[in-house]
Image 1 (cartoon, one colour):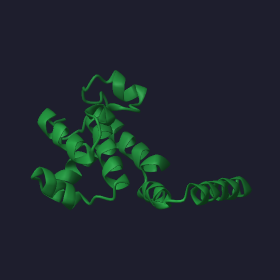
Image 2 (tube, one colour):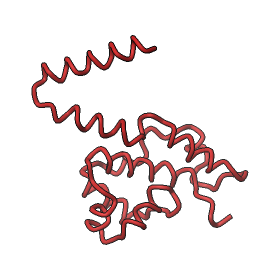
Image 3 (cartoon, one colour):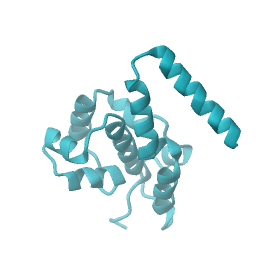
Image 4 (cartoon, helix red, strand yellow):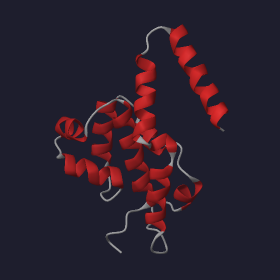
Length: 140
């Protein structure tokens, strides 16, 4: 059972990936900033490796967020696990699939948000927002 990621590690990793992607930072650049390889960053983001306190602190400084960011929006199931390994096989696989299917954690969503905030004119940004809302309403 040593190879089964813990739900908390998967959640922290997904928050790391979300923030990194939102800022447009590659795994390689993040790794260079904290003295890791991009493969190690990948393992953290998947929850395969646990993030220690000092590493979490380094990530929070480089990504300009409080450490609490990594634990925000934690699902009840994850919080109730209290950092323990899942009781049955497949639970962490299901959690990974759930994270990957969540539209808020998709790369496309994060890139869209990043591009949206690059529009400097608030009136234009508001029009883009209204356009996307109307398109969604028309297709739904």
